Length: 443
Image (cartoon, rainbow, N blue to C red; front, side, top):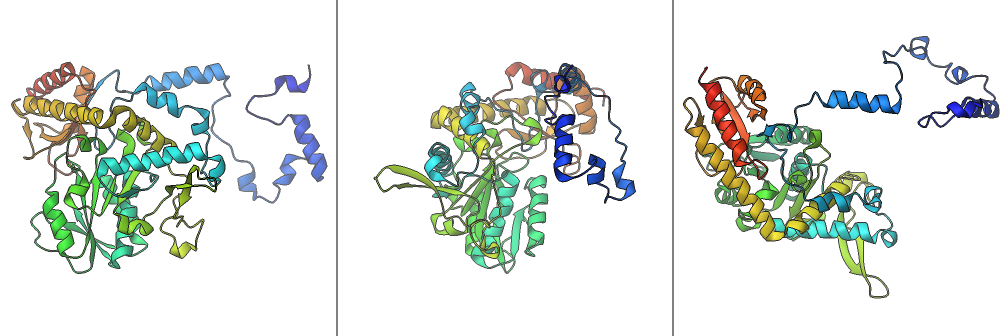
């Protein structure tokens, strides 16, 4: 039988192919090509299982996947930055088109008008959602958007201190700490009753709603920032803007957020897309890519990349960011989501989340041994004080086919951050309350 009859669909070169290449370069064997490597690197023994066929691999992957506990099989009340919302079928239908899936950064606008137009529409919708004047094509995720906004504020003000609300998402704070190291930014945690800012503060950072799901007094923080010559950076949940005030209403200077909630499944933490918008006066300091709308020599509408201040286009030390092909396909998913729901549809989604979360909170607060940890207005998340460690409760909830909230015992003793979205039915919420009551009775 000819050698090529056994050719693998995943290994393009046959033995005869390799022999021909070796003959062409005058090498006796593949090993001869690597004879300069130290002996301890040349003969590595890899602990790999035997080879499998495609069918066997698929069956093995399904066996592994069946060990996961996933929403759909379980009622899920886990959020904390990655949220389950309904994704209309049109989102996947449009974004699965090969023109979008395989497209790369549109350096040649004359052959990329479709990609550029959808990017322009994404920017337009983000501006409409946040009330801001300009937006970019997106960042890697919400955390990197926040960190880039902080660097932007430092450039604009020429200052090197950052005031961060203590209720900011811990993962966001960690990313911010990393970004702040190289430029030497000092990060201060903002006291809720703090009457003033430290000298040299470039910006005040607040999350709305905050990590615990509650709405912040953003008007006070806006006044605090601007009275001290600092900028206000707000990290928003975009779905909440369906019913709550846009950041432009309280004079935010830079608005960032995580776009995952709009049209993107949680998917093991990525890929996501970071939202980024600001006031027009700061546009030349805004990082990332910006798509502009113009006309060509024949007066036809044309879309182009504009204000290209990445390190690929100007001197590295003057670039506003080094972000590259950043989640453009995910941005398209959010674009289709926003366009398909529209203003009234997004408001309906937000209201469902709000009312279902408050229904769940009222049930849980009435269970002996449980209580709400915080007062105030919350959106779709709230903190419950449990009668035993949340980790133990979550383990026992799995027996009831329920994925519980996030264990935040490290922040609030026996605290559990519970998330409820429009996907949680009344039956699921009632089942959660009943399971918590049963578990709490044994505490």
